[in-house]
Image (cartoon, rainbow, N blue to C red; front, side):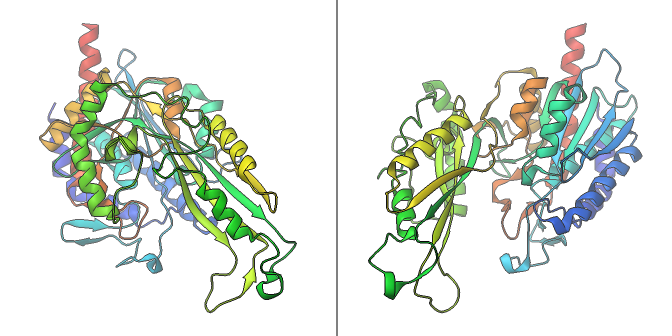
Length: 465
């Protein structure tokens, strides 16, 4: 059972080099100029899958998709063994020096025990942890204890069109006994955590129009409703003074957590508070009364204003009345909330509060996905908890995450059990400048992934005896 871990320790320096090689490929899926780099990374990953002994490795280009999936399979454990699907994504968010990076965002640099590079935590850490765990298992006597499907996505940061189409058209290719979404972070370097719930998401734009064109504020000011002002008035009515969403019906389907779950979540709240103080560092907390920080992040839905645009904001000054203004809005949703219904409710509310002096339209962008709620006492979850305790030396806490992983809901439809295994840390600045990981993150990720797969294999074998 320890041969794979010995192999991983022996080859850790090479694993680190390969990790850095993948980090240097700027797999930015949202910008067309990086399409060739995303393709290059997909081919690199497929070659490595074949090199470590997987039965097959395909780079899949779906009709209408922008970037490829990579699917590797190994069925050497035999028909009686379970099949585990491992999912991660290899694309990243845009990054440039002018965003505030201290070094080239696509050149890995180690400073003070951390490795800085775009994608280092989100999510090439997870890609390489799973890939190198498989290499370690396949290089050991007897090979892997379970059959494997390794599915790597190149569009997670830009809509996941290809994987959604693939799973809808060919569900048998991903169907498995257990699915692992390898993404996300744990609470702290000294305290791992397991996520058992993700929020859903729906995104939209609110467009407000007034005059037929931009106008001179001296000639026309005071005679018409400035679209920027009207937009601000509309947006200001989406929450009450306490931070609750004011849209009628918004909370109708929210299932309140029972006392036992809230007590369990209380254990992780101290860590959420520390993270808030270190990263958010706002003047004061804000949010729904009666809920702590962890509960506001995981238990409660939100409506956020993500961007505002209109008028002139360049150097100097331009005394203009803008013809139009726009706000980008997103809702993070909890289990039982339907994204389409939430959009419809918001659309009706915006129509009701838009003044007749302007024209307003709420446009749906990406539907995203519903929230996901996982079992906390499944075989897979127990194996994951044991894997974290082995890799970190302390039992994980359970938490609800505030983010969304669109593929989660779809995987729940085709897999018997599902777990989410993240190996990064919250202080890793994912999506922001100077994204980083602790230098031991890859080794811990590989170790946890090996232990999890061995644990799943042992659990299924014991049931068959």
